[in-house]
Length: 257
Image (tube, rainbow, N blue to C red; front, side):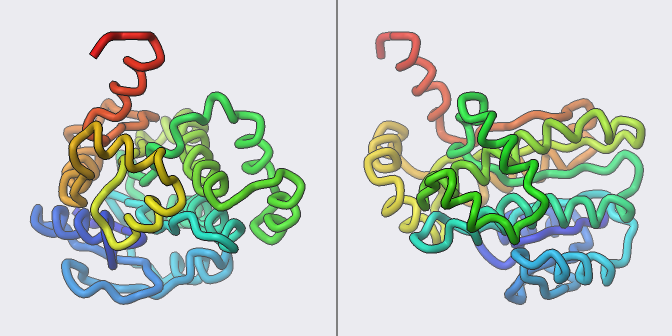
């Protein structure tokens, strides 16, 4: 199995690379930093730069069985435009650039987030973001929409989910499946960023689920969606959240607990 992966140097990406490598995959990694392990080839790329993404994809030797999009930035003040540029526009640009190098029947797995679960409520803003001509106009969009660091992250992940859904039908002709994985809080080096940005929204739910997740637990789901065993799963956003989705649903409908 030949896997192309962004964001393989750290966190969920590194854990996913380790899991897939353990299954015998040959992994071509796209990252701004060189991954320390579990990668066969590293192609350096800044995922906020469209030209850099095109150049990096051109260097990749396909065909590929799997594309895993793990690169992403957390919510930080002053990085609103870069979060949207990397998490949404970079992911879309890399996926489009790699499509000609994917085999028919391939799998695309993209990391979204539990933070993107309210995409239905925010669909008009999500559509407006996806309709932008490119990341260069993001500062103006952010100013007009009044987007703060937390909203930039939530919106970036909502857009990943919505865009992935929109690609299911175009990819059916090649039997390429595209799915997203939405973790809740996970023990990575950027967990503190989320706790700082989300505050009670993060800490209260971690208290209810009794712990945050481990990168390896998310990697297991990524590996499943990358495998032939997921061949009939298309356009699904899969929560990996220790019960967060169920707890919020129970709250919303007034179930006793």
